[in-house]
Length: 166
Image 1 (cartoon, rainbow, N blue to C red):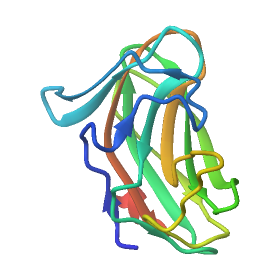
Image 2 (tube, helix red, strand yellow; image 1 turned 90 degrees about the vertical axis):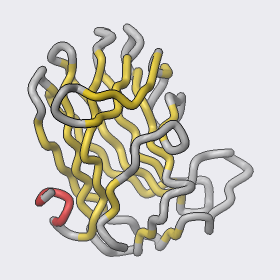
Image 3 (cartoon, one colour; image 1 turned 180 degrees about the horizontal axis):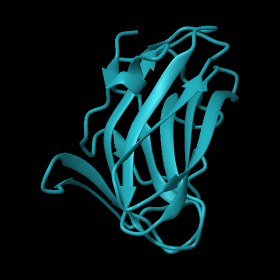
């Protein structure tokens, strides 16, 4: 898999629920924060509110046993705890997944975490009608009852450490 920077548009992002996102975000929009184009997510004032990035139409392939780095730039309208989970459907109704919980502030910060799937997955290869689950996704959600606006930028998934170097 080449380094994949995830595009920002409503085709790929979904407000949930699913993937840990229990309560959909109240709004989702591409925005300009004055220095960069970002995905702006207004979370509901409940725990587990956020967004999912669906890999279904992205040109992505995960190889079983290979380590990937997920990198995300985040800031929030107020300090908040955020959980990020990258998950890939193994084709049997279960997922390979890795998560990271981070403290997001009002300043831009780069967060990274590792993911090593046990199964190989290529976009469009797993159809799971029993669970009606997304094939692969990155979920980003708050863990507290605060209702902040999350700003998301520079989302990357890459083999080894390349996502951290962006």
